[in-house]
Length: 300
Ligand SMILES: [Ca+2]
Ligand SMILES: [Ca+2]
Ligand SMILES: [Ca+2]
Ligand SMILES: [Ca+2]
Image (cartoon, rainbow, N blue to C red; front, side):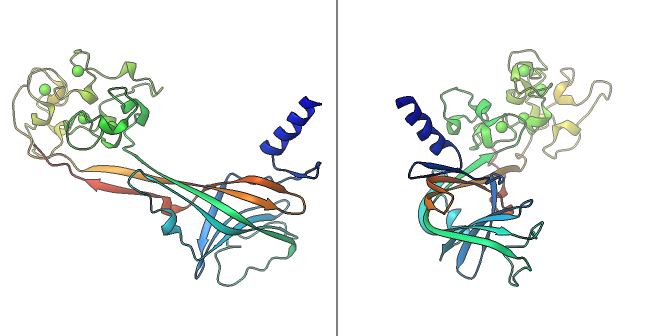
């Protein structure tokens, strides 16, 4: 009997099923994990729709905006609980227009049934930053202490996980072959001079005593890869036979990519066929969630 009770509780917690007075009513809420958002005059609506059969789930939060949800603190996170109204609707139309929500003029659809319930929407936002340099952020924890913010190989003020030129030699990390076979394991990272330091972390790639960034023999443009004395060998910074110093005067501009991950969980929803203490509404998909910023580190 005890085992049966455990199974019953587990089913209630883990799946989208109604648990009301001991009855289990199975419903098909076969929606994608991602949801969309739109803002009205003063309201914020989260929604997702599906066809065959046509249904929609939506959450209305009054007097709230998307900007407020994206106002992460210095730790890169934001969370809030807001009073909301949850709607489940079915439609007799075969498919739903993509502009069903977020439209000044109501779309011509036929609602077959509509249910709603007051609930609490728990919103959690996490801002992530990355350099998209071909190395997973977790592998840019050079000292291995679990903190990505205290690894700054070139000392330019940008931690390696947001630095797309980790060694500050003006050759982008992705162009220094940190993971030649693309398997996520950096054991095979290119190491031109064989000193045990991979090129993407080596300020003197060919070991000729001249810093890579200072092998600007042809054009001083913060791009040592276009300075080529011997075309049979390639760029001078990878050619130990050329050791001419033409000093760099600046770092290249860096781009940092930012992504907000917004998840919404509804608490205490109760419809005729669905009653749950906690309902995972999913992850927000919206063009406003990704952006980038450009920084040129001070050159020293
Ligand atoms: Ca990096
Ligand atoms: Ca580099
Ligand atoms: Ca090396
Ligand atoms: Ca060199």
